Length: 80
Image 1: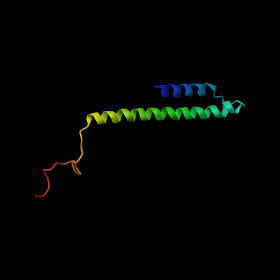
Image 2 (image 1 turned 90 degrees about the vertical axis):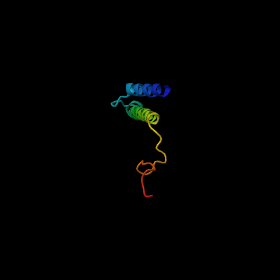
Image 3 (image 1 turned 60 degrees about the vertical axis):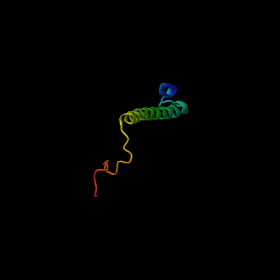
Image 4 (image 1 turned 60 degrees about the horizontal axis):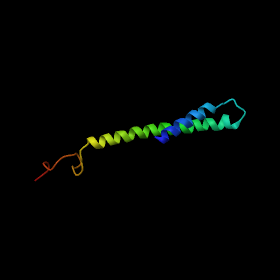
C-alpha cells in the first residue's frame, strides 16, 4: 500500500512542478523525467497487480494436470 502512495504522490508532485518553459533545468528537465519515471512505475504496478490477481485466481480454480500426457489424455488409449 505504501508503494502506491509513494508513486502517486511522486507523480502528482513532479507533475505540479513541471514547467517546460522555465529557464531552470530543475523544472524544465528533471521534473518531466520524474513524471515519466513515476508514470512508468504506476503502469508497471497496475500491470503486475492485475497479473498477480489473475494468477492467484487461475491457481485456485484449476486442477492439477501433472502426468496427463501430451494431449491431456489418460491411460485408456494406445496399443495393448
